[in-house]
Image (cartoon, rainbow, N blue to C red; front, side, top):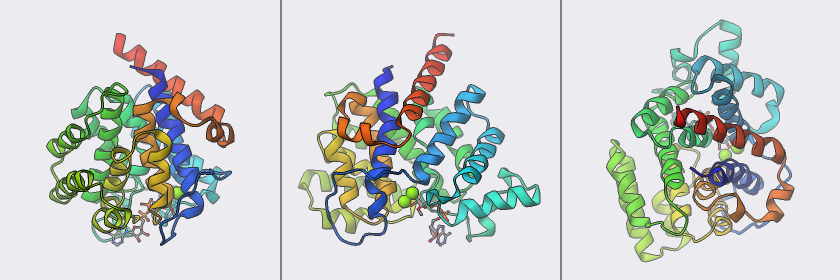
Amino acid sequence: MDISKFKGCLVGTAIGDSLGANREGAWYISEVRDIGPRYTDDTAMTIGVVESLINCKGFNVDDMTARFIQNYLHEPWRGYGPGPPRIFNMILKGRRRWDEMLDRKLYPGGSFGNGAAMRIAPIGLFYYDEPEKLREIVYKASIITHSHELAIEGAFLQAYAVSLAVNTRKSTLNRYDFLKKLKNITNNEMYFRKLEVMERLLQDKADKIDVINYLGNGVEAINSVPTAIYSFLANNDFEESVVYAVSLGGDADTIGAMTGAIAGAYYGIESIPLKWIEKLENREYIEYLAEKLWELKSESSTK
Ligand code: RVK
Ligand code: MG
Ligand code: MG
């Protein structure tokens, strides 16, 4: 297990997010190659997930919830989706708990937004060698704010894609194999169908309009997780993957962040352009967290 992949994944998340930050909501296709000065809630919540894993030496849902709330109160201006802050306030004011599926008070059947998937990468890293455990932990980490099946399955597929990327040695990626593994593990028909469409889009070297039409670029997990996985698979290095993801517009910071997580976990930190790393907000802390997570994983693997 390679420390460069852990760093690449977390730094990659923050860079994809910062690259897409100014394009969130854009409805036209256009390339950006300069990252913005700030990352958004996607990275802020990803940081919360890593901090909690490190602090508890593994997953602890009470600690993770507390950290989400603490980080939100510290930086409420990061651009959170409408649901999570309201859930945090419900917990703060009403002494309610994460396991009440509070998102169901806001959305019928719970939130199917991509807010669980956008923050899940560190869990894909930490449980990269335990797919069954990965599913269970993703479920618990998601329902704090997202309990709709499509949000949870999206988070799981994103985490699983990160774990596959960690497990795949650079230059040995077989794109159709990667898709096959995702198809084999999902138990949701809608995601399965999108994964099948992705195979065809890859074969046809589809243009971006078709990618947006078939996979989506929206804030819903089903319309952004497959797009992020596709952005990774349809390109040949880190830079092109995230530039491609963000160019699709829509929920650009989040699709950028999720693509950056997978691409960073596959290509490693040294493949991320220095011009971006140097400009990244809070870069030292993000790298420090990646190192600590890697150390913790190495210790627990050798026990
Ligand atoms: C601002 C109908 C539903 C729904 C349901 C829609 C940040 C709503 C990040 C809602 C990400 C949106 C993003 C987001 C992450 C969800 N019925 N509509 N059952 N469930 N929606 O509030 O954390 O950017 O339109 O849970 O998933 O960069 O507004 O937030 O782009 O999905 O927010 O769902 O958002 P939320 P989130
Ligand atoms: Mg955001
Ligand atoms: Mg977003």
